[in-house]
Length: 308
Image (cartoon, rainbow, N blue to C red; front, side, top):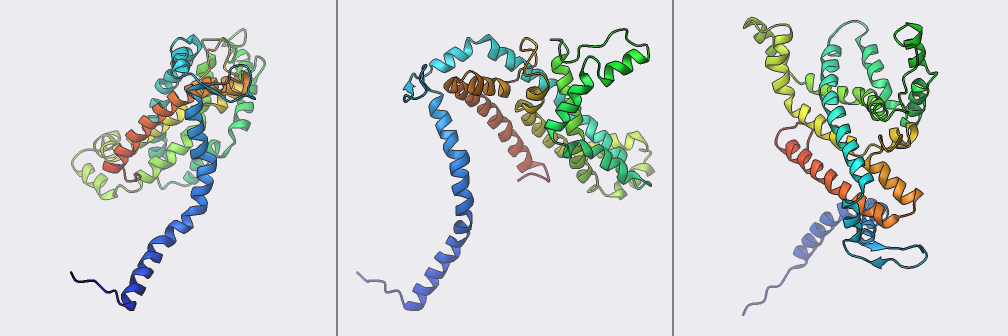
């Protein structure tokens, strides 16, 4: 049996290769350590706590109770109300944020004088803090706020509309703020896609008789389809995680009509101090967001130029 002898130059080359392969991980190590302490470890703790209970004494170690929190969740009417509200958020917000920003992007994607100011105006709500935006819109929605003053001043209404105090209007009013805040963000994504479409395609389509709005149907929509799917999935994930608007404007009321899943997690964890039940609700929400994220990654890998 022959033994293999590694010469010193070969040893040096192998050690250099090892160092070259190790150096990138050394640069990643601080970020991974921070992520581990602030994201991964708390996530694992939350997963464990969802199967336990502190009882009435948070100073004692949690007791393993198995699936009891999830059985309680299935019988919780407030939880199902929050699921319904979150689904309404998805159905109401996502289609608007998938279509209207594309229309705005088409309008501002022109070489006209002053068009940059329109782009800035549409994008301005994105850079405004949600706290500031929520407080401003709460003032606008107030009983004696600007919206009701305009309606009564123009004679359209004799009394103000209870935007945030009516169970049938509170969620819709919060959804309007989400749409207003997200229009500019998704418009920029669409605008980036529109600027990748060669102008020669529109010129060729015009020669074939496809002009005006018809050219957008024949050319823009098919080529922008990966972006539309991307915006739809991203806005759906954002809609399932909505919290700031509800917290600032309605606190989940009236009568839980605007309470979403994330707000219910916050309420159970930090108001009722039922950490274990909050972790169980958070685990369900995590699985939903994970499914949407997997859809987004699958679409991005196959079709979207922004994916990866």
